[in-house]
Image (cartoon, rainbow, N blue to C red; front, side, top):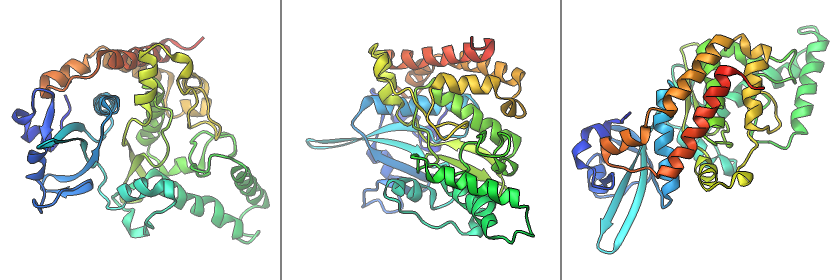
Length: 351
């Protein structure tokens, strides 16, 4: 089982339900007389502490940590804590913060309210940044700024093309997405998004793999406020880091209960500004020629085999034996079956 620092240092302190008492968490606070929630600086690094009262959500985040870690992503590692005093009992979902900057959590938390801290240019170098913030900066740099240049500096055709892209975006209902979100989108010349020039091949592959994992784990709400980019010294994207499992907890429970018709079957994706069915995400990865430049048929098949291995690795039992936390069996099986099915389709193709 993948563990963060607090989990490693408190392996013997988890109770029979797999919860770590909040008194152990508070020992890491610099001011031990106060209670902290949200983004918290501790002696073990920065952690995110959120109250939670839904077991499916807790199960979902813990499974997310382990599945995506096994798939090669750096992600927050989640565990449960419980505060008890007299008749008062409160459960917390806790994870380490993989962001190295100080603004990602604030900007992600306040995104629904259209409130955000401005990212300064010098803050981008060798740092993490919320994907939405990076896209907005690159939108200004690659699209908006070109529209005000003199026609002698760039070709009129290029200006017209960029203007067409912006006009299409303005007519699009998904305002959460910037013009540069989908990496393989027909709004651009050919299919390739110009922002790809600022991604390493590994990072592009991680974007592709993240879309596969989200489809395979019932997460239809992966948006640029819940994943990070790790930038290098040249401010180019070296690594992609998902932050949570989105609405997996809702869809996986519906699947576990056999209510397949109620599962959200549309998702934001890397291929269009329209929401599409998860099966179409897998089809695009298999059939889109632009994708194959970064994720070949052999790499796709190998990742399919990796997903099948993860699905059969008995993560739930590993979690239980490590910290004592028990993931609901039906919930776990629904996710692992879907993960296995996606792996088989990736390896053998979709008819």
